[in-house]
Length: 569
Image (spheres, helix red, strand yellow):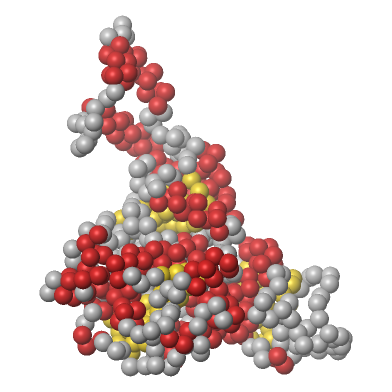
């Protein structure tokens, strides 16, 4: 069948505008006639055309019926919501269906103006969508389809309670679709609760590594991570590179050090203002940067097709995170490289993690200064002596005249050497020595015993700061709801939350020390959804009154009524 027969004239024209001549595997899969009228669980490799696939899934809801909006698409981050809005806008442009986005950090006035135009599709982050539903800015009575995109990340960020509340606003007869790169047990449980007559649609098999990505491990002393990163950037100066750091502090440190070394880099982390994040991402898309340095949370909204390399400064704590990070490259059929820096103590755990991710990686030393300089010399020689690139219009008269004068000088080699020195042909910085560490060929580490909590090992290595919450068991609090509240108010994911201690009227929740400062600033802001609940460091001198009681009685000293440590699936 032709695209017009499959998609209809309007969508086929949109594909033609993008010069797309065929559907990807996941796009073909969602159009299977046997799936019509059913709730879909869509999984496919990152970069396989999932966003367009979800557009094809909701096209019937968008085309038919009165009222607006007719479809809601829920995203975990502002950046991803904006990119999905842009993607759906071109897909439905010729059909005349408007697309709008509502996200945290954006202007309510601008969003209300966009909603007044009656968009057929609203792309949103959970908190802001719930605000508009509660205030009457969005009437969901005509919604025919809801998509939970990146469902695993939505749950990781503590949005489950918000998602369930949002779904209570839409008609029961709607279709509910989940899109997720992985389907762990918590995503499966959510899907079972909100979907009816579901079918699993796979563009690629779950757990199958992207064949377009080459995985490389460099064994590096932890003290040499910056030097290793500098050498990797110098070894492939034209590669559009996304660098993952573990914490916001690491992002700031590495971005600053690379800037001092002469590289054009930008940080991207959750503590940045939305406008700063948009500028950093725009510069990266335009190819103006040697690298973008990001945390996991900030990078979830990055959908750049031309990322040729991902560098992870240290191994993540789980296989799913590795899959999401490495999946930023090797998109839409392009080749990519995923580089992982590993210190010797983390080698055994890293091998186990890669096996869980279904990845076969090769071990290689970090490029040495001599190798980088030799490669740079060859690259410059090829650039200067090779044929002109296709479409080259020729040199202007001034450049050509100066070249002839230089060629006729008395000492041509000396002249060329001085010219090369002016252009810093070896790169923006000098390569650095890195301690040579090679993984033994005969090493066969045993898989470590799986901990009771998948995040417990990482958490034991972290330091946590206790926070008090004026919400206890008497107000309906439990560990699950407290987790969601802390993630939403402090804008952190659940990896940053430690032990949860539920009290009768006041509870205690631990927050990772590396994000505690920013968390405290965000969590202290008034909450429109419940201004009685206060969150503050347990060491604060002034403690606000518990929710629902203006004059709390001083409790008698006693042991906590209930202590529960959150389990992750």
